[in-house]
Length: 416
Image 1 (cartoon, helix red, strand yellow):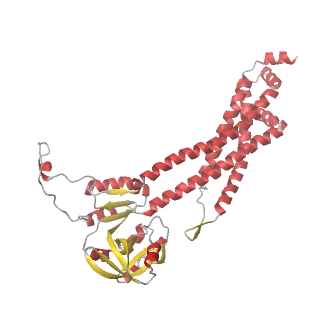
Image 2 (cartoon, one colour; image 1 turned 90 degrees about the vertical axis):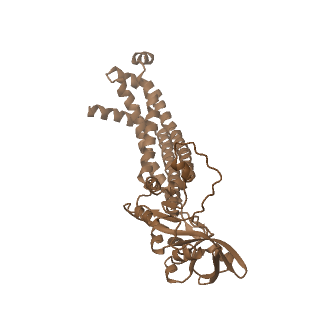
Image 3 (tube, helix red, strand yellow; image 1 turned 135 degrees about the vertical axis):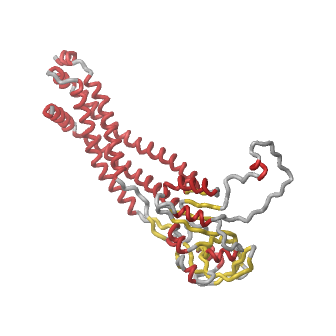
């Protein structure tokens, strides 16, 4: 059996060597298709992976807020669930916003293996300097914990998050807001809220301009400072949770919400619109790059078709000496696979070179030199190879099937 297979392989190689020009063209087509498949998929998948990583790191994986997805039922409707209850003229009781029993929520979140929960309080404030006012969303945080669940520390142009603990009345704002106010590191600004008089705040940090993860209208202060400014001592209205496995966020968020009743949003829920767009983008991407490989397979089809047409007499002789239809099909399918294999190897080299060129390009963004994120994983090479081998085998099998179905008697009679 091995000798028979080797003989068929030798015939296939002999056919290809006799038609060198067409062989080179077919191999070149596959190589170009595979190379550009790798370059395009590396670019698209790499940018998608980088975008998803930014979505994951932009905020805690789970945010528990003092909101409810549905209003609590009225006592009358709750006490008589099966009765015909008609409520009118009642006065809605005003409740203080904030997470009740937030320590229990923190404990439940921290009980998840590898999870870190951080409390915070947000509210509105106004910064004033020299007659100029700017609205600001202040966020009170615990610097020691917040640095573990967010990327604020990495986004700072100047200062450190822990400076909020060492400086009385410290505040971290964005470069854009600092430019509009005309302040720099160490300057003093006046801050006031609807529940507290004006107080002096010292700028101890500036986060970079153009960071989509951080709003330009947000400022960070110490948690107890925010509670004092907003007149809400010992109250928090948000708990951020960072998980060891970000993709488990939906399941854990659902458990926390079912247990405590407060709205718990996972990063997938907050970014649902973007993630649905990525699915559509992937369909378009793989359709385009698959079309590239499909076009490349036409070269293989042409080479094998011409080989079948030129070797009709040889086919008849092989059939007459005992070779089966399957043996003849195997010869021409091997021709297609050999062409695809050589093309894939050359395409891998071409794709690697294109990725090196793309990865070396510099793009000045927000004052920093950045590079195109590329996916260089072996998975892309394997996908390109598998698609090329499949397309090459099918492209060779179509004319091979026709060659195996011919009647050797008719061919030999025509040749006499």
